[in-house]
Length: 263
Image 1 (cartoon, helix red, strand yellow):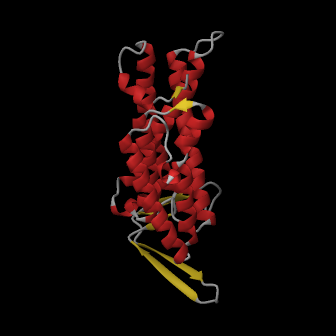
Image 2: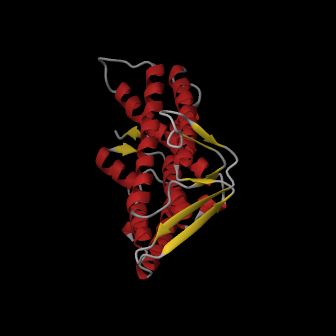
Image 3: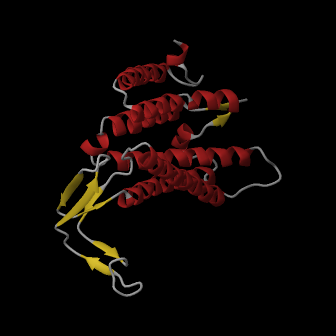
């Protein structure tokens, strides 16, 4: 029971109930995935349970209080990206799902970065950082986290045979490999179809035809994700700057996303 209800001391009763609800769903899906021997799903579900413990571990061992609203958003984000997005294909059913989550992740990561440097700035007397410096550092921290997550997606696709970096049909490509001279860029427009010839483990030839274009294997998706992360990071950084610049008198909603040091 303690496992299902593990939460921070600042979590409201509603957040605790949502923890229980999310964990019950994940445990049920984990048991089913083990029975069906879907090991990539098992790995993702185990990772989800570990991520659910992060707010509790951070508060316990780093002595940091996490606002209840931030905790709710974090665990809902984890559930939405792994269980709903990857395992139930919300990314495919709802086109804006992936973009919205990456924008939110950029916002949340910026909140974490802002908190780290803000707490440091409030507890040192030798050096005082300017609001602009804190905002720029916050933005850079969030973008670094976004890039690191793209490494995770690439690794999952490469080693776990997943498709986290979603493919996309494009009608035009530019390539120097198709040119007859060095560095000559050849542009193919209005691609009608692409034929892929592959071979199975038993030597059987397989032909796959992609109609209405060429299959981009994740590059566009990665850049779209980073662009969404950019928007979320920029949004928080601007309001974080205004919050400090106005000496905490305005833009008080930012406090709901800033962990504080436990006294």
